[in-house]
Image 1 (cartoon, rainbow, N blue to C red):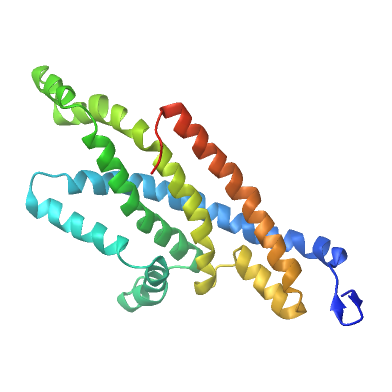
Image 2 (image 1 turned 30 degrees about the horizontal axis):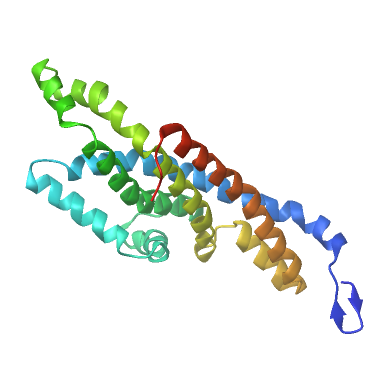
Length: 226
């Protein structure tokens, strides 16, 4: 640790030494985010279809589940998955719990985006499908979803960026992500300035390109995300 009197100065040797270890933690975050957004996109569509059901006994449980998840903090949901589920015989690893928690949490937000996209499909499209005597499966697969999904792609991109920033919450259940590693190194060396700065730069290196990609999607599909 370099010092000038009582004042610490930036230690580049230390930075080069610990950067690979902190980057390994960033890779964990990236992997969890990719897996989580994949679950969110698939599960979100399923939740949206369930909530739009004309049968109240189907739509009500879906709506209740979506509202419950959206109304509770992600951190509590991670604690429940990792600490409470074992009481019911379901034991998941820390990283699996993080992926599942992120996927379910953001699936509820994705479901509302999907629902808005589906509702934006013109009524004439539904009527045309009925007039052509298309089956419900064919109507959804060939008429509705091809028009609805492009409208929600930018919103899904925004959820990806948000998920990158929420994934470090996994450190609370022992996931060795970037903040977990940076904090561990800082607690051992007392050089928090370097470790946390490195972690912040790594987040910028990942989240800024992701945000630019979302802007590209907004321009491509002519949609301005709220």
